[in-house]
Image 1 (cartoon, rainbow, N blue to C red):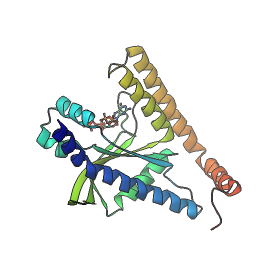
Image 2: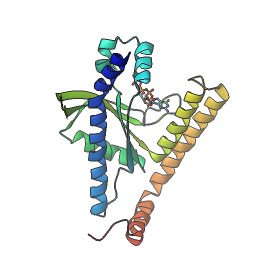
Image 3: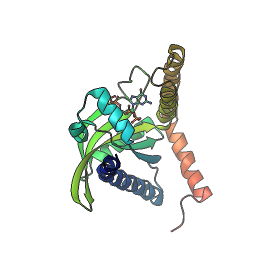
Image 4: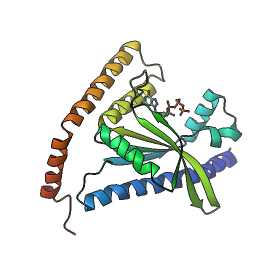
Length: 214
Ligand code: 0O2
């Protein structure tokens, strides 16, 4: 058991390193936009490495053998990029595609193809090379790109899924579908007043000193 835990800890090291590196890299881009006094298509970035129990649960659910986990479970490493506007998602996708340190395996566009739950987000399954103490390792990761409104909805829905152990009562599910539609409408409305919001943010950043005089 102790040995098994140690084995899992070692297995997860490159994934932890990968998400930390990617977080720093994406946050550097945000800082660069701020220093250039330009609007950043990235609002903030969060990362996580799947818990061992969740990895094993997913493997069991999908009938994946222990030896295939590394290849078959693509979201052990997860990066979430949050944007203010739907338009920013395309910009972030292009930005990722232009990088030489990230290789795209495939993409899933749940922004255009909303899931029946109401979930919207853009997913990129990628390969990323990490240089660990034991040498170079190519890992897979999932990058989820979504707006603040999409994130709000997904966070609430995820908590409810957890609370109801994936069996959310029909009435709440219906409410969630309605809430997803409201979030979608909010994104659309914000897009329509995008230029006004961007102007307001620029002047706010200067007045509040968020953009320092360097
Ligand atoms: P967690 O706890 O966030 O890690 P896959 O799971 O990728 O093997 P699947 O389910 O077809 O196969 O992939 P999908 O649908 O692209 O889901 C991948 C991840 O997207 C999920 O990971 C969630 O993070 C997110 N996601 C997808 N659908 C929904 C949804 O309806 N609601 C919410 N809140 N998130 C969703 P995990 O492992 O399911 O969960």
